[in-house]
Length: 356
Ligand SMILES: Nc1ncnc2c1ncn2[C@@H]1O[C@H](COP(=O)(O)OP(=O)(O)OP(=O)(O)O)[C@@H](O)[C@H]1O
Image (cartoon, rainbow, N blue to C red; front, side, top):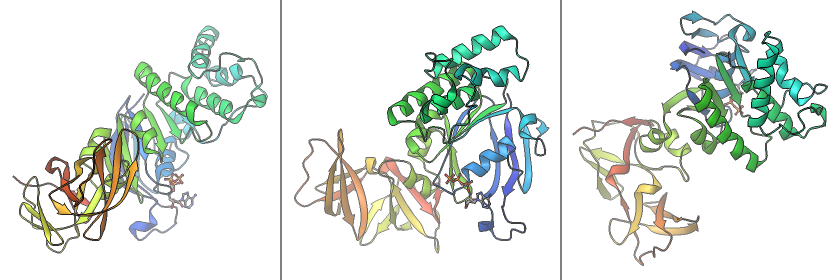
């Protein structure tokens, strides 16, 4: 296994890129640590597959270098990089049995027969295909075939990394949950570097130790699920992570005070001079409460989501969301209160560090 380093990597699918928008992947300088469990998370078209294909060697970046430990692998083939990859749709040998499909990549590498047998049986167990291991793959349903693809990715212990590109798309919802927890367990047990592409935040947050959030070809934040929740470094992270996402309110700041329309709230620290910049206060619904005092709001809708309620309200013409307890009753003259501990300030979409 290896540490995977992006050294000033950019990629454009155009022959002569000029503007930043011409790049499907804008400059990345980052190391994926050996043995880490990463998720690449972002909406459709943000560059996740492009980044993954640069690691696997299916794509050569137009600029920069990729290294596995100290070795420059930018010009090496996928085979030479020793990477296992699991795609969105099953890639299986239909004429082979389930068992043979898993044994094949090991035979190709001259692994001794007994080790092959032990590894294949262990992997079949993990993916729940021990029964019927000698059936032809052709006869199986799409989700079972995809399990074979997952198994083929997991069966080798000598790979530099295992890459997963939305691997659970064709798996039914219950099995999705089960396979995701299996992958997590496998990661803990074998310590492979795993990089998992998804646009689903639940998948990313449950699988990964570190989540790489991408937006319009840029990596906007790399962090643990808790860091993404508590300190979103970009408004997109605040909006994309969480259910519902972070409230963003345009404000004017003056030291510790932030003005929202005719009202003011106190920030957890002093803002720097942000004159001329688009400034927003970010506060998650979890830190937003409906109360009898604070800033006046109109309530539009109450959604009961089980353990709590989501209150949709309007503050100074701006839609906001607040959390309320299951049995909490709402005041006749509703106001909103923001918990200072949950406040983040953004200038031109990027988080601003507040002073003392
Ligand atoms: N072969 C290609 N030629 C030209 N443009 C491409 C090519 N592949 C991808 N793109 C463009 O590059 C951008 C990033 O695409 P990419 O597939 O990496 O995004 P993604 O985040 O993986 O999206 P999805 O979740 O839909 O797969 C998109 O604007 C896409 O249209």
